[in-house]
Amino acid sequence: MDATTSVSGKGLQVGVVGAGVAGLSAAIALRRIGHSVEVFERSEFKNENGAAVSITPNGGRILERWGFDSIKAGGIENIQVSHPTIFLGCLHGAPFKSSHVWGTLDSGLKPQQVRRPKGDTLEPMAPTLSFANVEQQYGNKWYFYHRVDMHRQLREMAEAFGSTIRLGAQVMDVDPETGMIHLKDGSQIQKDLVIIADGQHDRLNAKITGQEVPMKRSGQTAYRCLIPLKDILEDEETRPFFKGQAPGFWAPALPAKGVMAVTYPCRNNEILNVLAVHRKLGQHATSEDDVVIDDWNFPATHEDLEHVLDGFHPSVKKMFLKSPEVKVYTQMKRDPLSKMTKGKALLIGDACHPMLLTHAQGVSSSIEDAATLEVFLADVPASGDVSATPSEKLLQRLEQYEKFRLPRVSATQILTNPIVPGPQAAAKHAEQEAEIRKYYSGPLPATGAMPHSPPICQFFFGYDVEKEGKAFIESLEHQETTGPEVAGEEEVVEPTPQPEEAIVKVESVAPIINGVQKTQVVEKPAPVQEASVTTMEQRVLDLERKLADMEKKLSAMAIHVSTMEVQLTPPQSPPAQVETQPLIFSS
Ligand SMILES: Cc1cc2nc3c(=O)[nH]c(=O)nc-3n(C[C@H](O)[C@H](O)[C@H](O)COP(=O)(O)OP(=O)(O)OC[C@H]3O[C@@H](n4cnc5c(N)ncnc54)[C@H](O)[C@@H]3O)c2cc1C
Picture (tube, rainbow, N blue to C red):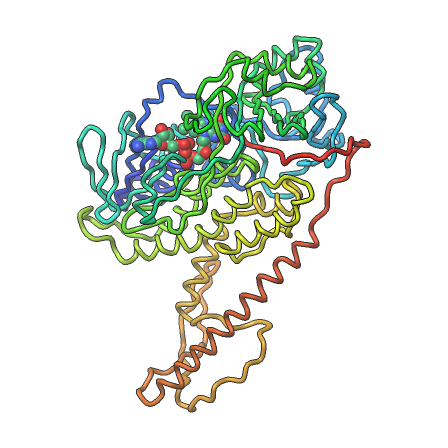
């Protein structure tokens, strides 16, 4: 269904707190499966702001399925390849338009690496990275957007799908048990389900988890600015940085000073997005030690930026200082939550799993959350009465959503915490993996895989949340029908002797897979009789032990397999051998 088709079915009455990327995506997803959606947003969106956002293939494939028009939203594909159209466009001083390149990448030109010059001398640094062939490798493109353009189109889609968006409606409180939403104007609205998507400064998460989980400093301060590309191309001194270059990352850094800049284009390649991150300042250069900037648009000055860029090549400084204004924020992080749902409420997006910008997963994970809602709540019927206790089906699906999603987002949160290369790196990587394993038992990139290396990209970009979510539900349904699977290369454990009559053969109806329903014969324990209780308990214990063994084996296998995938992209030209810090590929 495309965005212009509105769904008329009634479904659940859902309230969404916050119309950011997560809230709007949830609204689209829930309308697609026929639920009624009312979004409460505190802002009036009169001065929409924000810099660029980068949407990796895992988020992009969902937007594509929903009919999101990347061209209309001024999206720029992260191409990393030279192209004659771009080259000519730049030579004539005209900014390259995204429409020049779509569908025409058949020039046979070689993909370029991400450009990572040393900030002072501009020599290339090692290790280099390549995001060439992203679409071939991960199934979808990687797009850059101005956040405002992307957000506006999501909002239009949410409304076209039939959601009601109430601007200037600040939510003060939510009661997860009753589904009651309390607004600042004193009114209250009750819903069957409340999706809490009010961003990283959310205070409602404690209502779900029962505990305060504080936001912590990441130790990084990010200065952001947007520069018209035309201004850069018109200046002979700064023009060579982008002349003849396809849209992609250009990231000069001074690792020894703990400063790195990441730039990429957005809005039809008319604007260059710049993020200069200072690892050592740990705060806004002119603020008090304990100041935390929790506003995405906190103003900074050109002097602040100049101070951060101390030691950079004069042309780099000149280019960055062309920006009309500078913003700053302190990057915060939070440990994974222990829960994401309670009663009639569910946390999504940054409210649930704020993460650092290193792998551009904040926005894409929020879109994944919404896609998960679409899979898990598709068959939950309307309650007919919002004051009624939630249906068994709704509670079951929310619990399953949490089982499916919480381990994955927790792993993502931890994995996006950067590890600085150096003598401590190996120990830090092992620590990071041990931390992830507290929450997540699935396959992981090999310990020590470099940020943005193929195994890491595969983990993030190759993930198809919709496919995985459907498989998860199918496996639960299958287990319900057949009992837990104990197949495969399991250790042979002597079965506890069973009386012949304890096992009965029954015909069971298997779930419908690809439209085919098969009758299968499964072995089911006979109804337990008093005399066999001890035997049955023993059997359950045996099964639990077998399962634990299998889980252990599986997680070991996953690590082993992914070890084979680590291959660093060889540099194109002899690079300067300096210790680099992990790149940041978001805002
Ligand atoms: C103004 C703004 C600018 C941003 N700029 C960038 C950027 O340049 N680069 C980047 O990578 N990320 C940026 N982000 C964050 C990025 O959009 C998120 O990390 C990601 O999209 C996850 O989105 P979210 O919807 O969970 O949170 P957010 O995008 O933070 O959205 C939360 C929404 O909830 C609303 N809200 C908060 N409290 C309440 C309340 N009590 N009642 C009602 N509504 C409430 C907020 O106004 C906001 O619209 C920005 C976010 C905002 C709000």
